[in-house]
Image (cartoon, rainbow, N blue to C red):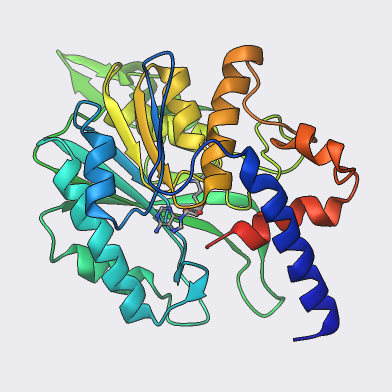
Length: 329
Ligand SMILES: C[S@@+](CC[C@H](N)C(=O)[O-])C[C@H]1O[C@@H](n2cnc3c(N)ncnc32)[C@H](O)[C@@H]1O
């Protein structure tokens, strides 16, 4: 390890030690929303007892939205077979807490330089469970990565499964329909497709091109988080696959995007993160949204007050390092 990296890790560890006492939850704790709506837990998604305990405090979820770390568990890169066995564990736990008729969405990466792992292995593991596969959604990022020798990588994969017969509501984008000319005779009248449509806009379908990925200038940006999903993407899932008042679960909370989407749409959210710092960020994000209507910190930071006290707010490297070191993805 270079001296530079080892100094950096030491600094990160110092920063974590500084932030941890300001976190309300430690491993095994559950925060109950004073407004009686949501539950936030600090614990392991693969710990059956903990997951059962937090879910015993709310009606069974009709929707699960899972965004696990990709091929990494507890900060360690795992061989794909071990990663899949770990996924099988929390998927079965998820199955055990979901309502009889429910939906499950999983965000999962695919390494194009390594036979797209772990996506095919994950799909194969899911075929051995009681979930039914329903859709393979792609969300397009605006910024991508890659070289001049390959297609720029701009996609995020989202798998949709169901159990029993959950409800599904068709969602429309804000993109107007422009294609005309699909004529059909209805009650003796020749009608054109836009006349027959339920909406003047196009359906979301399984390729989402209308969602802006989160970047630091956006109001919903949460500094200190490295894998935030756009609220709009989670709202789309919540609106399609749950009803007002129902419970939605998310075992990998991170910045609390599912929590904020549920708060906005009147669902109850049960969410868990292994890391006390992310569990605290979730609580603070909800409190901030309720107090100010703001969904993130944009150029600020969830631990701004604490960081200012030690003059660390001006040190951008240290701010971003909170996420890198504390990340287990
Ligand atoms: C990819 S992020 C989730 C991003 C989230 N959807 C958002 O929009 O902010 C994965 C999160 O899972 C958490 N995590 C990793 N392993 C976990 C485990 N075994 N149990 C619970 N949470 C875990 C990490 O701390 C990280 O915050």
